[in-house]
Image (cartoon, rainbow, N blue to C red; front, side):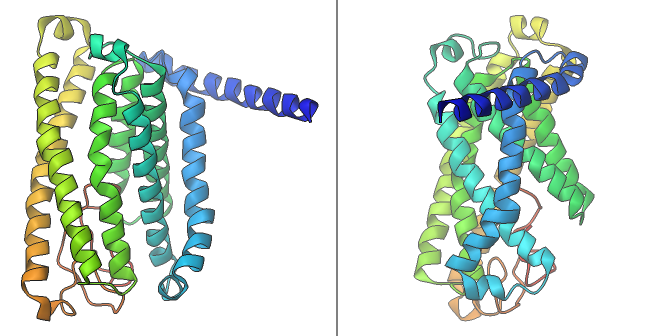
Length: 315
């Protein structure tokens, strides 16, 4: 048994070394010295999310929701269901990893240039997820915006491997706190629980976590982020391309959070203020095929929870 373990360890070390060499050209071109040692985890994460997408999610869904999953009439609809499973798994995993890095002294002491392995693990998993997201958006191409969204996230989180802003990256990953409730809301629609008490409770939790994580805590940590980024030492030490990319990316996401929050409140109020219209206007698109009013999706791909495919629902 020990020899088998040794052989497996040697094989894994060989794969790690190969993946690190594979990342070297990009790391040198972009001056990201922490990318090669973290790239194996990025690759394994992308492969892991792919395995969940094409293997675990279909098997688990056929077991837990055989009727609802069986009603999905085409490959696109099944793929969309599986994407929500991956999104749910990623959100739970990456938040748990990010929380581990919260109190690392090295990050607290230097919020811009400090680094620690625990933060880089969380960041690597996030990059792997967005890499999977981008590849899936290309393979199942429906809109260029989906591809650009995933690619932009890959770029933003990859630049952290300078290393830059690991203190903030693990904190901004907590924006995913609302994602599990978002996906549960979608699954409740798809399993015939539109307008149920369970969905109402979940909707309240969705709005609460979104508001607390992305607006209250998000603005709190964003103020610190902007204040630190505009200090003279940071502006002098950080290349202008990196500095501008981080600020523009953060400003865009902060604005989108406000827009999404407003539209989610409006959509949920319309749904539960008019219960007689639930069958006509489900929030996310019901299993019966009625079309939902648009509700923006803050995580994963797609500008809306609902799209033009009444079976597929959110993207």
